[in-house]
Length: 102
Image (cartoon, rainbow, N blue to C red):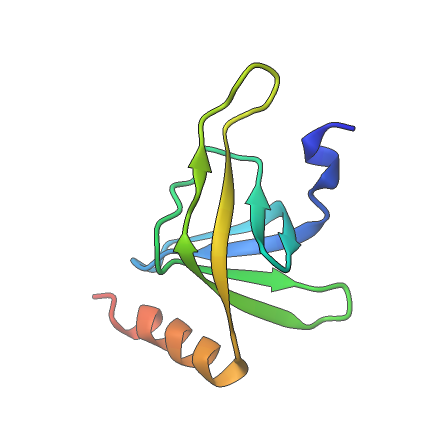
């Protein structure tokens, strides 16, 4: 099974500078988030939002991007270590990014 077939979750990356990348396919797991792409630079403190099929949204803060260069048939990818934010923390983090940009 190709790695891309395992990417069932839709995520949005909100960079600390306010830039957003939406509609990315990833695998959100209890121990981290896996993204089989290398065309987006993910850095510590960026936010990841996952939209669930029931309409809920989870927000995670990137602790360690965990970028891995490709090897043979495995493409370059991220194995992110993240911290799940509760609703108040998520709203505060998103407002901080939104309102600090000039």
